[in-house]
Image 1: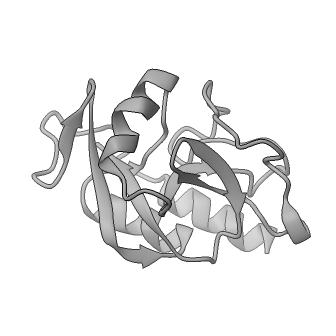
Image 2 (image 1 turned 180 degrees about the vertical axis):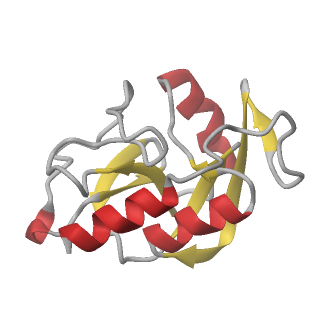
Length: 145
């Protein structure tokens, strides 16, 4: 699984990491950055990442508490949304899919991350909190451009 995940991560982070000067049409300005919030379709984490790339963005990384508070009102309450963060390459070290670097902001729910059943490597947001979850489970997703 780890080797396959590394190949997928590498292929998802290939050319085009730089955001375009103009955000794609479906993206909206929330705070100081552009996001697309999928409110209907649920996908696994890998397909959500590919979908964001096809749209001209990437899975979102929330950069601060302020940004989280600007995004949450746009989300369906109690729904699950994939974010960019994952620990597929090194258990317990959550990195962004685009930078492969640890991110400065996490808002983990109490007891998270817990890697339940040793199978939770991708991060979902539910309301104001982040949870580690199985990457092959389905959720809505948030893209950034």
